[in-house]
Image 1 (cartoon, rainbow, N blue to C red):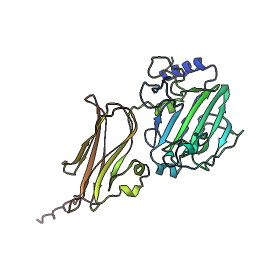
Image 2: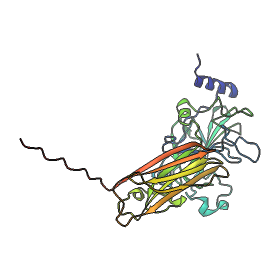
Image 3: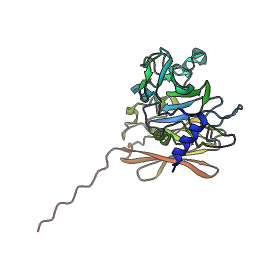
Image 4: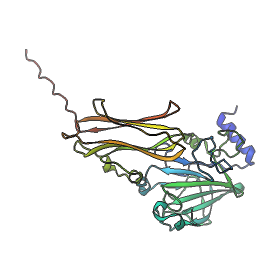
Length: 339
């Protein structure tokens, strides 16, 4: 008897012939923990956009899957790009700097939008392409045979990008294929088939709204500062000049309303903010609230921030983060009574 996954693999085989491409994760990370799908392939042939699940986690003309790291700090620490399947290295490019186009402008990478990257050729007319890799990290050469899971280099910030990620593209006979929906049907949401191997498919279950970063700082932060957040920024104390909580999200949708509340150890509200409904889907959003330090300093205890997103009056996402400041004194035990 065929399981649901076995049926999906069989359907994919029937759609693409006797040798369908089977893919492992192309990044050495754990989806939903230290990496996230930022954008999927665009399935809308018009100037609009729609991902394979009929969601808005894409943009017009996007031809691949973006595996995003949590921050530039993680990228600088080094995250390996892996061969998603056995293959032979085709074209390779290295030497482009890891820098956001917010700093250089789009014209600086014209004709080299992929940045540092490579193409792997696989049996049956399949190709996979790996873009935006780190300068100087590519470890393979044209014509080299590679095996599934073999390191190819590291995730970077090269080419046409504003955040650290791997842009992963699949093609067969020169035509783009969505690994999440290799045989899409008009008018259908989701897909019974996939090119991902079973383990990868389980890790890559579709998620509409995703928390990328959250935490506390001693000041208001910009989107760029959150991207470059260092661990010491989170090392607050009762003397910190302010207590600010932040939540960075990807995949919020039109009509979403975010509410952020900061609570003191006794449960009282220190700060609260409700954002305006989003007029359209957003690739990323940053919500922050905070309060200046009281004259006597921050009371010791556990501070909590609650983040909630609602749409049409219904809660669609919620999460919380907490931090302990100072030390709570535990009363000394009473001396034992003497007979």
